[in-house]
Length: 76
Image (tube, rainbow, N blue to C red):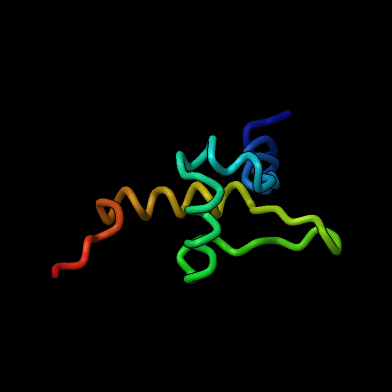
């Protein structure tokens, strides 16, 4: 498999919810809260009950967090 084909396959890889903690370092509950507030990548509905996420979207989300320096704490 050449490099461009392999890259396309990897970027379109579907990540299941149970794999997210390993990839992001966040708990499933934290990911759920981020989703609820619109602060995480959108789910892909694979079937009526099956969900997933595109690996490329997760990687971009992580890169954006790194560039921003992580979440900003509110001043009280």
